[in-house]
Amino acid sequence: MKDLKENIQKNNMKKLVLSVALGMFCYCTNNAMKKKEKIIDINEILTTILLGYNDIVKARKAINAEEGKIYATIKDNEGKVKKVQVLQFITKQFTKEEQNENEFQDGINKIKKYFHLEDKKNDDECNEGNLTEIFWNEKQKDETQKIDGENDIIRNYFNAIKDGESIISKKFKKYYEEEKTKKGKVKNVENIVIEEIMQKCLGETKTENIENDFLENLGKIYDELGELYGEDFKGNKKATLETIKRRITLENTITEEKLKAFIKQKIGEEKKEGGCCHCCDYFWKNPKGDLGRKSEEKKLEGEGGAQWGDENNK
Image (cartoon, rainbow, N blue to C red; front, side, top):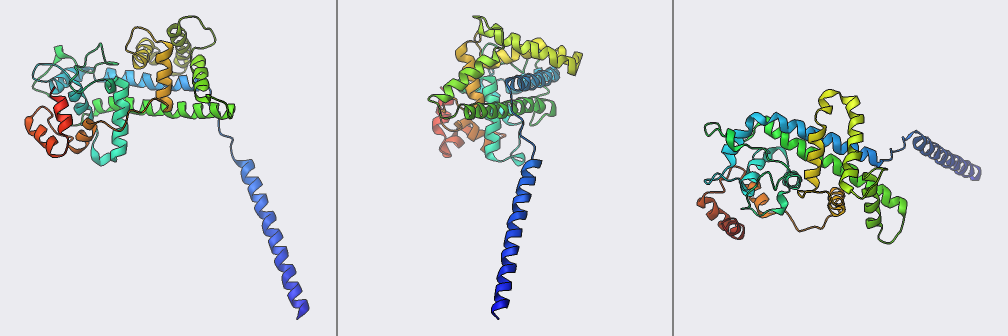
């Protein structure tokens, strides 16, 4: 009986040792087979920016024939286009059934940032001087063909903006986190890394002119991409660089402050100003609402939105 117990214990010990050995072998084999994750460099970030904004430029060109219809749809009774109408028009291109509320608000916020709409009040007029670009044309207006609901070509334009901004942010965030990790526990590591990212964006040849350095560096990379993507891509160089500049700043010159602000926005380090605005919440609940009618203002008041309704009518 004693011998039997000893044999059982020995067999169990052998099984345990074998199990541990096999486990270690599988662990080592799996680790050896895993591909090392690619490290992102600044040229990959800038390439992503150029490809994303080139797609936006192409999508913008595709809606040229729709400009008059868009203006006729979003203008107010005075013929002006205000932020509230622009946001309402954009929102109608995205249906509730396709996404949840967080996805909706995130997409709208990306488009708002692209156009610099987050800096405006709801009753501010939107024009070519205070937006990244305009996507309507008063001279071509067609009152008989207003756009009701979704339009595939226009929707593709807004999707190009939303998707491009999203991909650029993901790349920027990953690169930012990698650079912070390399630094280790360093005081003010966030500011140090942002400064270094900005300097890398300017390229190797640096002067006193930040805008020239940045756009020239982008231009060199764009030319290299042009060799890969052909003449159609090359033809959009000027428009793409101009769009990137307008996205970063509406002022005449890209300054250090503006470029850093753009980088901070892309990595999610910009100053948070609170949750989504009332207008986004209203559009989510009332995607087909007419914000110009007093009946809708009454509805806002009934839903606790009187403050937003009053602000819109100032």
